[in-house]
Length: 166
Image (cartoon, rainbow, N blue to C red):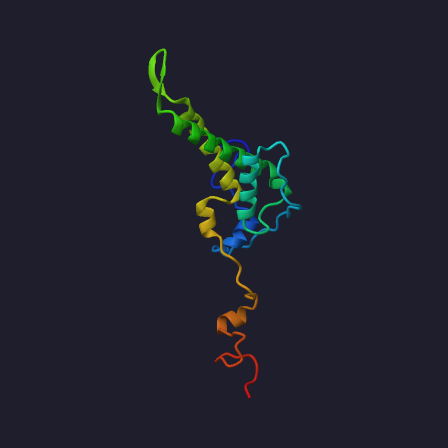
């Protein structure tokens, strides 16, 4: 390919790689850490605000920051548009009458484009069902490789007890 275009899969953010468990065992590059929390736009309708808030609250902890505000805005507005299209389609039919006869309801095209926007934003935010399925919560106190290898635990009466039994 000519120029500086990149081919292949987009790199995953380091936060997502860590939550997935780094199955490839490759070094995770340090990347800038976002600051602050995303802000909901003040002009959002009540429905858009509720969708935005539901998205932020359902995201894994420390995944979203203020820099994600625009992408969250796209996600919430696309979600609200999808809902509105579905409401209007359910009140009408898949085919509508025009001067040329029956034609496909234009809301179906709007819905298809909205779903593409929604999927794109969800993928970039790490919020697709496939991305969530790969997320792994970090295990507590698993930073000692020797204790993991030998199966040591904090049970003082267990076979691998680290404290002396009386």
